[in-house]
Amino acid sequence: MTIEINNLYKKFGKNQVLKGVDLNIGKGHIYAVLGPNGSGKTTLIKSILGMVIPDKGDISILEKSIKKDWRYRKQINYLPQIANFPPNIKVKELLHMIKDLRNSPSEEETLIALFGLEPFLSKKLSTLSGGTKQKVNIVLTFMFDSPLIILDEPTTGLDPKALICLKGLILNEKAKGKTILITSHIMQFVEEMADEVLYLLEGEIYFKGTIGQLMEQTGQHDFEHAIAALTTTESHAENS
Amino acid sequence: MLKILKYSFYDLIRSRWSYVYFLFYLTLGFVLLFLNNDVSKAVITLMNVIIVLIPLIGTIFGVMYYYNSREFTELLLAQPIKRSSIFMGQYFGVAGSLTLSLVLGLGIPFVLYGLLRSNAIFDFSLLLVTGAFLTFIFVGLSFVIAISNENKIKGFGYAVLLWLFLAVVYDGLFLMSLIVFEEYPLDTFSLVATMLNPIDLSRILILLKLDISALLGYTGAIFKKFFGTDLGFLVSMAVLFLWTVLPILGLRHKAKRKDF
Image 1 (spheres, rainbow over the protein chains, first blue to last red):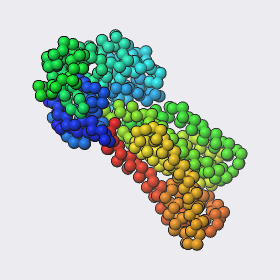
Image 2 (image 1 turned 180 degrees about the horizontal axis):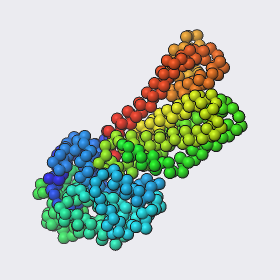
Image 3 (image 1 turned 120 degrees about the vertical axis):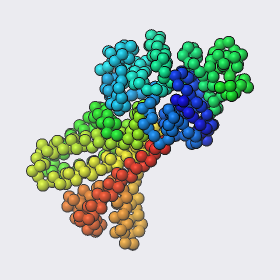
Image 4 (image 1 turned 90 degrees about the horizontal axis):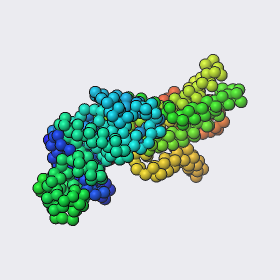
């Protein structure tokens, strides 16, 4: 198992966000984490990353509990949702800095070429457009070789060409046997990329299974409607 | 931690505000020296300015830096780095770069003026040391306030209030209590009350070293008796040090438990 989550609870003030999440995520697939706004997607991902500290429950990454540990994050590449970098630093300095901090081998040159970022390398981050920042963000995420990749809304601000590059990248990583978690609101993207769907509702895993199973269960023929129908049918996560 | 420190520091010393801060001290130093034509007097005037200004700038810079780098902090949190290292690195980066602006900004004009040959060098170094302490203390306090408040406006408000309290209101309350309890012996009270506020403590420490405590009258004599001695000096430095360490510990404590 790449990720093992047992009975995870998290409360923010009075708001109980995660209510006993149990989840096993195997190796080498692309998982889409879906759910309505406020269902706990981001909280779940941030718990895995150790940014949110759960009230109860355990998380293990690659068979190791993450409690009070930080070294396990070397196994994770994370693409945050809003990329806001220090404004006074140049792109190449940022790349160099993250490389320096992670201290592991990286292959940024091919990625920089892929997204056509060469002209921006000597520019300060504050001068970049949103889409270009996202490309830098993607380069930062994919330049390390880690068994687990977590992408939070990776498509934000990307032009079609970059989007195709991103899809290629994700599939390429999957082919190397890596586990990939994606959250997205673009259902077309999810349908194209994901092997399995995790649907979170009110802090619990409401559905876990392939897209085919999801269609079957909801009796819908189109993915977007199937997702919408999930919230209204009586189905439950048992068939995962 | 050192890596984070390096990058925060590097980021800050290239920001416009560090230069503004540096140039401000540079101008202040030159103007005071050449208007006063007397290093000792310049040190006193400087003390009056920086004792209030350093805490204000430290507070505002600290809060601003924390909130502005929040997203970047999140990026760092997802990297294999210990949490406390991230915040400690940022804290020392901010406090360090502000201290550097202070030391260079004031140091250059004084050195050019011939400080090294004057006997005011110890007073001047004391000024810089307390200035550095105040920077570290107030950046630390502002970081603790910022990390405890998700809301920027609130955090900013609390930080400025804290500065206002320690720089202005505290003295008012102190004076009032001295008047109200006039008939009681107040020696210990005033000593302790001074110790409890880093701004007051720094001011007294510098004033007494400058040998103008005669102007302070009876209280001055008591203070001189305490702060003027080596023991008093050491105790005050220890208290300033404690004031520096406490916010750092608070920051570490908060950082460990916070959700991002």
